[in-house]
Image (cartoon, rainbow, N blue to C red; front, top):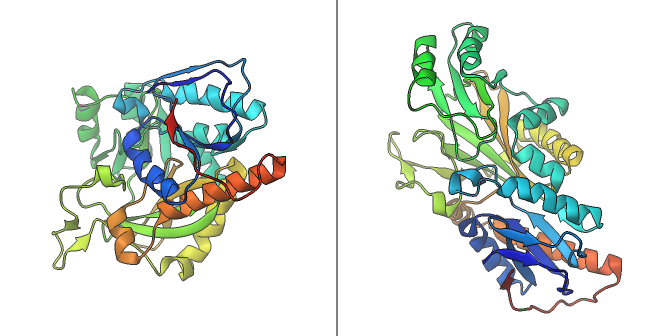
Amino acid sequence: MPVSYDGSDTTPAIYVIHENAEWTAPLYHALDELGLVYYDWNLATVSLNLSAAAPQGIFYNRMSASSHSRGNRYAAEMTVGVLAWLEGQGRTVLNGRSALHLEISKLIQYAALRQAGLNVPKTIASADSDDVIAAYSAFDGMPVITKHNRAGKGLGVQLFRSEKGLISYVRGDEFFPSVDGITLVQRYIASPENIITRVEFIGRELVYAVRVDTSNGFELCPADVCALEASTCMADSEPRFAFDIDQDFPNSALGQELVPKMQAVMQAENLDVAAFEFITDADGTAYVYDINTNTNYNSDAENRAGLSAMSRLAAYLGHELAYNHEKNSRLTPPYKKAKKRAY
């Protein structure tokens, strides 16, 4: 149902801003488990009276950089305006405008990562196909990957070990530019184990790190609806899971080095919920190459580890709602569940 808001709703609640119902279903289940009031704001289609007062409550932005790949071409642009409307009225917005700008631009991500002292692979941004080809010369014949600046789901990610291969791709029918017109050419970082690590934060606190097998390619969405047909990689002598929580990461030397810097990025960019992806080369150097502010979780990996990030996220949203209500003296705990509605 399209979001349509005219200013008549006065019930304090959690408002979830998104464009993909499949990705919000697990969150809504977790919110139901806690009996929290929440409304579904799917901005794939929207009609808002911007002259009206925004509803009371907190607003959790889950707009995705890959929304255009699901036919929701302008959902992110609409969300920027909606977030400005909310923030302009002093509403509590989790992952607000700054987070969304970062979500839809890897150029912004890389600037934020470098500012916090994190390693980022060498990257050249090009807005013209000829410049994409010319960028190869800056990498001294080393392998490169291409990717979209506004991506998600591994959009536009291709590996090239020669200039000839890159030229063939860019000049061929398979090449398609990023929706924002910016293609990135990036140094390829080879992982000896074909593993990348995704570090999850909720409320800027570390939840866990999950090791992701890249043997099947670069489309690494952890959500259950994105699951690969095979849950394990059979290329090894002993099968390994596509997603597996790394219980040792928080106390490892690498974890101790990376986590505070990632939290510094979240503080500087007003990120409340996010995931950072990094890859470690043969020398043990970690390169962070993606920040995802519309994070999903893999239930198989969580079940094996006895964890539930979605439950923790729901609890965090409940805490923020309670804090917001107490701060504004609008509601006294405990909070009763209201019937879920989609505007």
